[in-house]
Length: 178
Image (tube, helix red, strand yellow):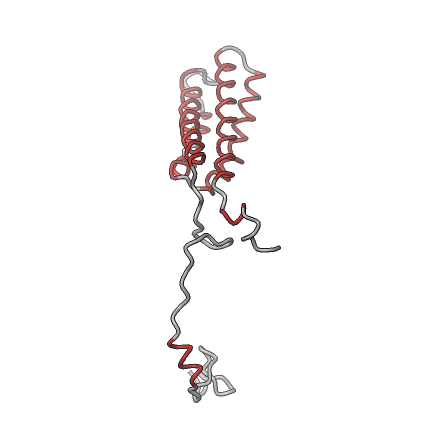
């Protein structure tokens, strides 16, 4: 480094922006001060927020898990061997494999997974409604079952998201003004 590169032009250390020649009582007191204690309650906008987990939320999680697993098995068996689009199976079995992506997040109760699953599951609802009105026979029955499972999963995930909101979002006295 060139001479004086580590010092600011006002006799301050460049990294700390503090005078290097003055030692006052205030700076000594600041160095000895303990860091603030973290509160145990939830705080809005922080990473690692605590979620209020109720009995209702647990029921919605169980409903979502069982519905998702049933929808995975239905999609894979439907396009694999029950009523495939082409004899011998088709590439449509991949729609059941795509449902494996949110499975572990749903089983662990992660809110973010529930949020994006509620958007993602609407494609399955749309596909079930389309095939329930256009197909005939066993494929139409399976499409009705897929529609019912997708709708149940959508409603259960929305109810889970609503039941696990932060306490500050529900209590207007502790919420910060906009």
